[in-house]
Image (cartoon, rainbow, N blue to C red; front, top):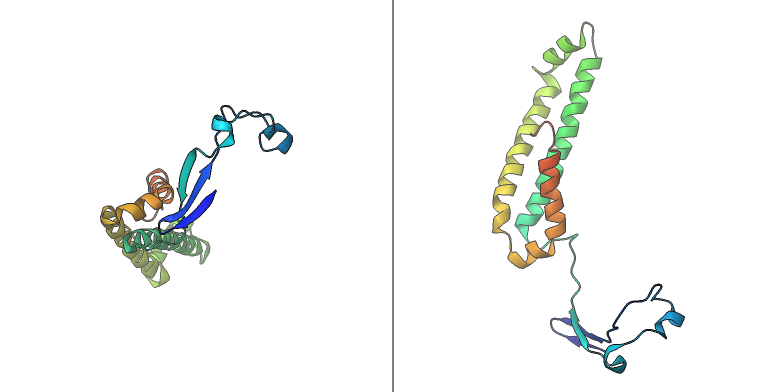
Length: 156
């Protein structure tokens, strides 16, 4: 039995005493023992939520800052590789000379800006809405643990 309410959809389900192997098959379901003669005794309220889009700007800023830091890191490493491959002489000398001007300086600047944005977003994350943070908890924890375990090299 299901009914709609302002807080979501309310559903009542029967409960079994023990789940049998392959319990989703109809022939197995016929042999399962239910509590209270299949009377709905488990009551749930379902509410559709998304953890893909957030309505909290602080959580959204954290997602965006991590993406910006990763992008700045990739661009910085691509620029370093391009500097090491171009021109004559040793790779070490080319990388050093490339880092003093041109695009390498701008990518370093982008990395610094991304790092500042990431720090700011992470500092503001505790101020996010509690229910919204709880809704996004798996994704936020994954994001934080990924930063701890493998931060973008240029930003770290």
